[in-house]
Amino acid sequence: MFKIKQGIAITLFVAFQLTGLAQQATKQETNSLPIGVFDSGTGGLTVLEAILKLDAFNNESGEPGADGKPDFTKEQFQYLADQANMPYGNYAAAGKTDLLKEHVLKNLQFLLANKYDQPTGTSWVNDNKANVKMVVVACNTATAYALSDMKAYIKEYKEGVPCIGVIDAGSKAALLYQQTHKGTIGVFATAGTVASNGYPRTLKALAVKYAGVGELSIICQGGVGLAESIDRDNDYFNDTVTKTRSNYRGPSLKNTSLSIDTSLLPAYHFDKSYNKLLCEYDPNNPNNCLDMQINDPENYVRYHLVTLLEKMRAQHIELPLNTLILGCTHYPYMKDTIAKVLKELYNFKNGDVYRYRPFMAEHIELIDPAIETAKEAYLALRANHLEAKVASKDKPHFFICVPNTDLKEVKLETNGWFTYNYKYGRNAGENKQYIRVEPFSTKNISAATYQRFKVALPHVYPLLSKQVVGLTTSF
Image 1 (cartoon, rainbow, N blue to C red):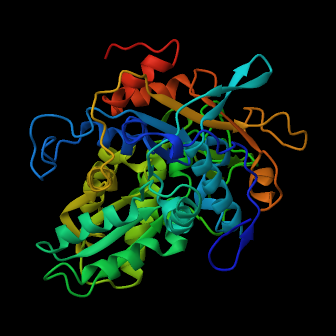
Image 2 (tube, helix red, strand yellow; image 1 turned 45 degrees about the horizontal axis):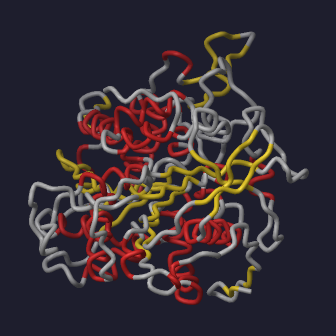
Image 3 (tube, rainbow, N blue to C red; image 1 turned 180 degrees about the vertical axis):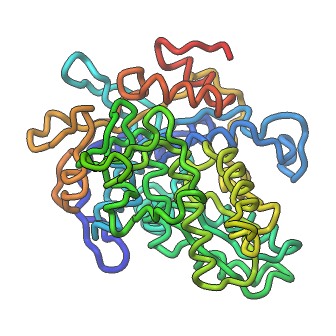
């Protein structure tokens, strides 16, 4: 039994046997192994994108300074999206952080093992893959709740595998900006990451190393529904519906914990086209909206940024918001939208009064932890002498967790993913194989999502097109 810190003992179901690991490998064989990157969904591909395009070091000496060559040019990668169990941000609210840790450690086991599931008709067969030499945890919630447990697991079972998280990296970038631009740091992350207090705790711990930063002003906003809508979670986004629905869990007029304030509708400035905002009208009064539901990632951005600024107004925070950490790896997909909405809110007026301008800098620095995480990963690679000596010719491998339909108890939505109640109703330590891990395909990821990758991930998408049958390589 692997004992997780804080006294929680979880019997881990080892779905993927840790056989064929690198204990028997020579140093050269170890260095040729891939780097593992995992996230609760596809958001972590933004971290892989940052890794692939990083040129911050000299490839020969390892010293800081660009040399015109990608720093990871000789490396190969494995990516794992725990799509079946996402969003991770809701496990804390459900009182299931022990189950979250179990999912994270199973992901780690998969990366350290040398098997995966290959779909064959309605069943699966085992196929071979390489184990990884380093792990990058491209998930803020997993980093906040389970990074220390992952490191402890590696130390016990597979010592010598560096494990890098995203929170330290994002915090360092924010503090570096604060050295010359004093203001309030906003943390825009999943509800689970916010509940963990991971960013404020890390920011305060690291601040002593940054001259001139002084006491910090921090405001947090949990972006419930944003990451989920980006990954097309049916509980928060469904582009086929035309009216409000009972299984929706995002902000609405009827959701007391995530209420849409009708007095703030001009500030939200929701996009109402193409069913991006769903309204239920009183049949006796067509002008009376009984409920309102968000059904679009941009509208989630609008709701949460207004909510963050309203918190600043209510708390009379004096230092204007000038730094915003995108504390979820899905959020960089919406970076341009976030910047656009912040500009709108800076210029938003109630009559002749700028409602939010006293609480905002005209320029707000958006911190993408992916870039700093890529730098930390490179430094760890060099420090542990794990860099590949010869450029890899192997194709990359992208894997996704899907429901294990052989487990008869599983409850699925019509779209084939776990129901909300089943997902968060499970308990840690039950030793059940809830998921299978199979390669990315056009069956387990939608065409619309691949199109987003094509636009937003110019370094990742060509690698995906080598694996996924049916993807076009042209831009």
